[in-house]
Image 1 (cartoon, helix red, strand yellow):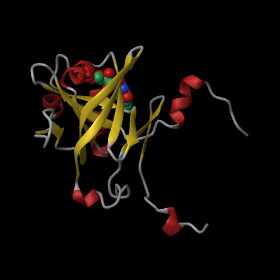
Image 2 (cartoon, helix red, strand yellow):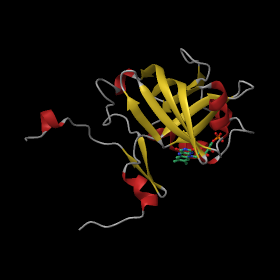
Image 3 (cartoon, rainbow, N blue to C red):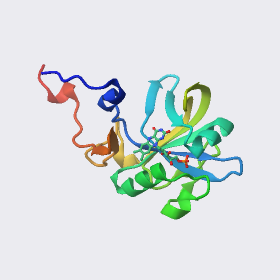
Image 4 (cartoon, helix red, strand yellow):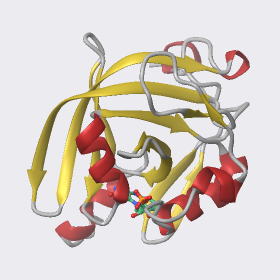
Length: 186
Ligand SMILES: Cc1cc2nc3c(=O)[nH]c(=O)nc-3n(C[C@H](O)[C@H](O)[C@H](O)COP(=O)(O)O)c2cc1C
């Protein structure tokens, strides 16, 4: 039996891409970290992704000005940092220092990546769209790296658990990885 739900919570059915930590730098070159659930892959060649950043976020201003950010992918071990970076603004605090996270020089852009995250996508904004309180940054991935032991053709989700925001205060973690072509009889 199908249950009708409000369109305002329909996003929760497609919300569970991995939670990411976005690093950016402000006009004083201070690095900052914010938590983002609302990301989207747009294309593979050329590699394009998008993030939706609300007006409440200090990072929005920084990314608007510098046009650069890193998508850092945390695993379950960084759950506290995920919540902290999503509930505290970096306008007046240094989240790297508070959370004892280590900034690592990026290869192609100014904002640093987070050493404790197992994968990083360095991004340059190519277009931005505003609707109401949200800025949607469409960006080109200019460099990417990932911890070797956690990736072959895809993330080895049985070896590293990414975190997925379901909405309404709920989260999920990844589990068994499979490929239907090998494991399922059709
Ligand atoms: C689990 C989680 C997911 C979030 N996802 C987003 C998001 O997709 N877009 C957004 O604008 N804010 C999101 N936030 C809120 C920001 O992370 C929050 O406003 C943060 O304090 C901004 O940091 P800043 O002011 O240092 O940039 C999320 C928060 C949490 C806890």
